[in-house]
Length: 367
Picture 1 (tube, rainbow, N blue to C red):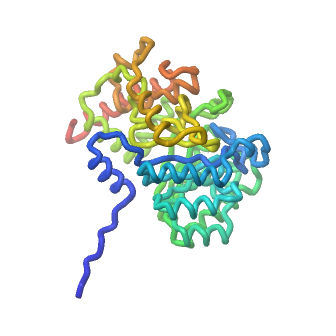
Picture 2 (cartoon, rainbow, N blue to C red):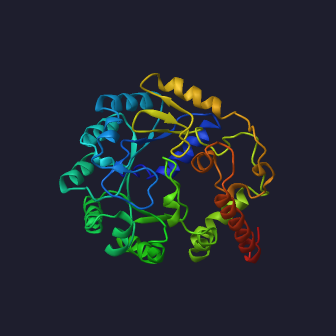
Picture 3 (cartoon, rainbow, N blue to C red):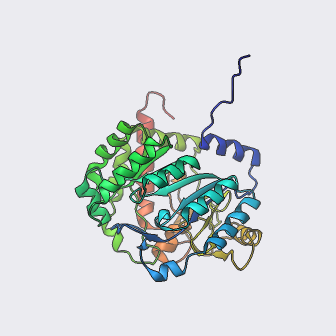
């Protein structure tokens, strides 16, 4: 007897199906869990990393038992998609224990890593307990550029070995890059590398300030015009923005709500000390899961979603709409509040919208 079997569905497709069934209701469908802020690399642009051997940073991390309690509460709340990230998550000596525990809880896990700490034994472990996806960050296509970004000699070779270990175990791999002045010229080579390996690749041209408020990393960021020019260089990106623009046409000004970006509607973030926030970048307000319950935190954060603006804002009169990434996370890191627009992000939004409208007008099938 023949059996057609079950059709394969991607994580994105599954997420879309679940969102449709929720019909706009708020539910913690996914969570990002930052296991540590420590990292073995010293990247010139990183918004978070603390030294790998920092006793102070390690002392602020959840114990294994506390981290398992967080996983229990996420699972009990109905969370399905789980992103394990850092810092570098593999620095935790109990990483495998926590990963195995999360898998047994039924989470569909994505692992963010720089890949440099992966060993054959750890790759075998991941092959046994299979994440849905492993995402490795690529900082350059050559050792010279990669290590100019990471500040650690030999890290490029270790990253390439990590990629090889993941691929040879048949694990699903994605590569990604943050584009900086230090590695921008190697974008074509990084993309070509991913294509030669048969894996997906994405890049981001915007650079976040550090969570501790220091702005030095911004010396590495691309100018708004450079960021938007990448859309023309890679037509698939321009097509995505064009489809997004058409989907939400005509553009509408932002609402009077402070958090109008979707943060906290279907996802939450938990940092390495157990504080839950609306997203990875908007760390305020936060709720201490060790002193309360997930339900208490979910309710407290939910109340934030209805909070109205208290300051006049050009966002409420702007018609750039969905092609602008302005959000409270950017405001918090640059201005120290939730509402003040960030000029850098505004300029990218304006330029991207103008470029998208022009591309649509020139298209054989205009919007």
